[in-house]
Image (tube, rainbow over all chains, first blue to last red; front, side, top):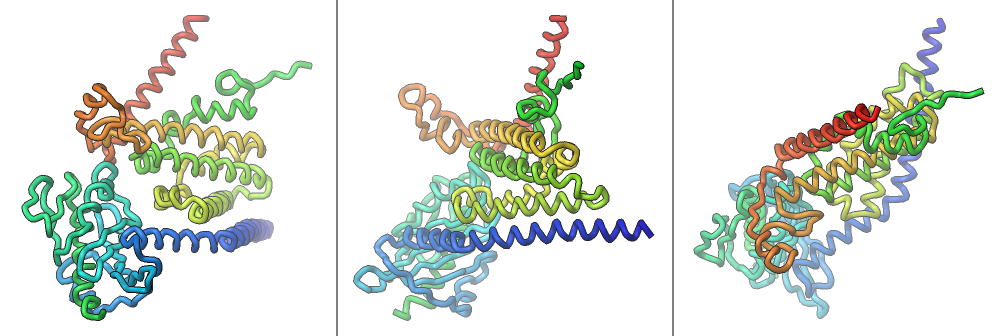
Length: 202
Length: 231
């Protein structure tokens, strides 16, 4: 009899510990909810602003899945997360910001691509990346600056120092071909999506 | 009436705050002596900054969970102590994660994926089981602080070596290789360095860890020898 009593007593103690822990977590969650949402939107804005420094507002447009399928072609592991129209302080639409998720070597790489109305890549900005330090993590330094100002439809990755067409080729980070390709393919898909869904819609 | 005072690490009074602190830092350093918590040690030490951030987050959780478990040690029944410890530890980890997301987004960006790993970090669980569940709140808290700082120092040093050899940087400042911040002829000479990428990959963690443990053992063996000779 006392065995059963002990079991129930222990179960109740454990139950109370979890109950208190749960209540505490709920409290912390409530307190931090707004700051976390604020930080997220802040990071998002920063990434948008980074690719279109002249824009002041960004209007959310939906993602057209048919156009996305078309743009994706046979590439794998790439998803368009959001499409926004960039509007400058005079109220004119100056281009689009497309947020892309692409499977890298370590984890998904999330970045924004800014494409101006005349199909030029205005810039790209990485939101989250977790690649190998010293190799893939150099993407910010090596890959990102290469895109600005280019206006090819599809980009290809070539080995370091083997650039023959600077308009459409991207030099890979040595030792991190997968990372280089993930970002380059992501930009290509965003660019193709722009071509199918957004270019004519102006 | 003379009560014999128990001597702990480094000849300090057993279970006093200072003794607990140096015990964790040197005598029973979790990474280099006890060899627990190896998963985060190998996974996050690819740079010094990552090591430091992970170490401090772990220290925070370790000190608080040790104190809470010590406070509850008379309430928690022996048969359900393991789930109870896990609940306490997991709660603190979640709190740390939420606070970091809300107020330290940069740190969260760098460590986000590693924070949930603290829950199953055996240093925290090991200290709860081996120390906090048998001792008072104050020594348990300092035990957590000491162990945490010991862990932080060890993984920051490992991270520093891996980063310097593997990428030529220290705390993200380029020291060796192209773009060295050191000016003049020394800088020009250092810029010729070619980073050994294997050191920032997983295998490099084993190399650096092995060297550090060997060094630590050598120091300990030497000091033991000196003590013997002095007698």
